[in-house]
Length: 101
Image (tube, rainbow, N blue to C red; front, side):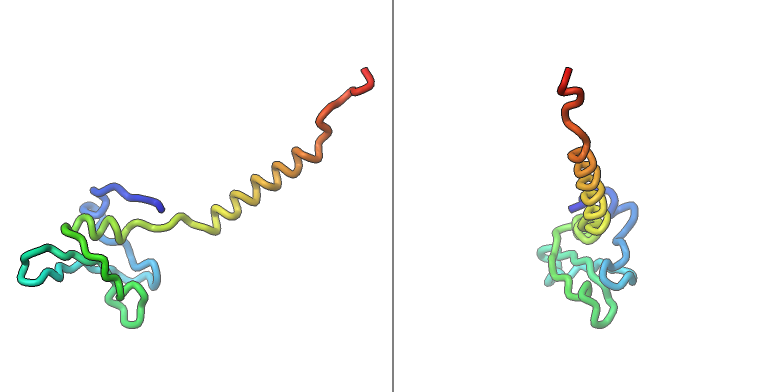
C-alpha cells in the first residue's frame, strides 16, 4: 500500500472516491459524542465507497486511511515485464567469449 503522511489528511482533505471519482466526505458518527467515530466515505448512491464503515478516533486518521491507495498494479506489471525482457536478452548473449584462447 502507498501510505500518505498523517499531515496529508489535514492539508488535502479526503481524495476523490477511488470507485466513482466523486467527492468524499468525513463525518463523526459517535453516539452521544462519547467515543469519536470518524468515517470517510462517498455519498454517491450505489457506489462501493458509500459502504465504508471503518471508524477512527480522529478526523485526520480517517482521512489518511481513505487517502491510502494501492499501488498502480498495471504500471507494476509493465515494469516487471520490462525487467523480464531485459533478463531474457542478457541470457541470450554469449557468457564466455574466446574459449579457444
